[in-house]
Structure formats: structure tokens, C-alpha cells
Amino acid sequence: MSNMKLNFFVSVFTICLLSFNLNAQDVAILKYNGGGDWYSNPTALPNLINYCNTNINTKINSKPETVEAGSIDIFQYPFVHMTGHGNVFFDDDDAENLRNYLISGGFIHIDDNYGMRPYIEKELKKVLPNKELVELPVNHPIFSIAYKFPDGLPKIHEHDGLPPKALGLFHEDRLVLLFTFESDLGDGWEDPEVHNDPEAVREKALKMGANIIKYAFEN
Image (cartoon, rainbow, N blue to C red; front, side, top):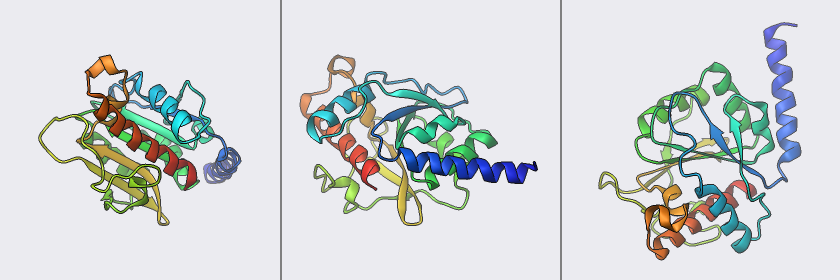
């Protein structure tokens, strides 16, 4: 069988697999190459899951799985979270797998834990080469689907004195990837003693996270 035919059959299979699993409410953490600390903020996603299950009626497994960028296992999860501080690298297989995942109905949230932006923007060009990250307007549904954020993405941690930004990649008018930076939502999701954030700040981060989860599951 030629590589072209093999790729076609793999793509069809993965699209069907994702469509079959879209009703699932499992989430995963993306493991990527390049040396960046994909494993940072270990308490963040479990705390967000608990918040969502308690407050917006989700039924997400309390322990998020880890999935590699090039693994077909990613198609089991309608929502994948990615974070870190440093370098990110997607090889050709990773990029193709992530592309198929996104255009088939998947959703990736990338939360810059500080210093990730120059690397991830370059690598996303491999995943969706004809798409550009665009800033989401404050009236985008992701800022109001469960909790109201009339000013858009909240600021959780200060780094460079810049305003928080929510950038998106769209496929056929559907938001398939959200990149949040100069906000550090994940730090706000962590256990209280990790960063000693005031409860009001943590609540703001968790509410925005719940919006992202709800949007990903329903769109």
C-alpha cells in the first residue's frame, strides 16, 4: 500500500474514532518534545476538573491522562491541555496527528506558563500552516458560556507587565485551539499553597478554566 493510501486510511480511522468519542468527558495533558516542561503545574488540571464537576455539571475523570503529540490516543479526548515554560518541538508525524485531531473536532488549550510563546507559535505553523493566531474579541462566547468575563481573559500572574491575551486558531469558523498568555491560568488552578494566590484570584482562574472546558465540550 502506498504512503498516500495509508495516510488516507489512518486519517479516516482517526476521524471516526474521535467522532465516536466526542460524547466522552475525559481530558488529557499533552506531552511534547523539545525539552519544555510539559509536566509543570501538576495540581492545576485535577483542581480544574474538580471545580468543573462541582460547578458546571461535568463528569470528567478526576485524574487527567497524559497523551503524546504523535499518539492516536489523543482522539479519545475532546479536550487537551498543554503548558510549559520552554521549548516545544513537533516533528512531521506530531504535526499531522495534531492537525487531524483539531480538524476532526478536537480542542487544545495552550496556557503559557511563561516563556513558551516564541516556540509554540513557530510549531503551530506546522500543524495548521495556513492559519494565523487571532485575538479573540471580548464578546466571544468563551468569555460568557458559564461565567461572565466582560473584559476578556483575566490576569492571574504578573510577568512582563503586559495585558493578558487569548489567541485562537479557527477551522471552518470553529475555534479549535486557544492560546492564553500573560495570564497564567494554570498557576491559578494549582493548590493554594503553591503560589499563595488570594482566593478571589484562584476563583477567577478556575471560572475562566471552566468556561474553556464547557466551550470545548459543547462546540
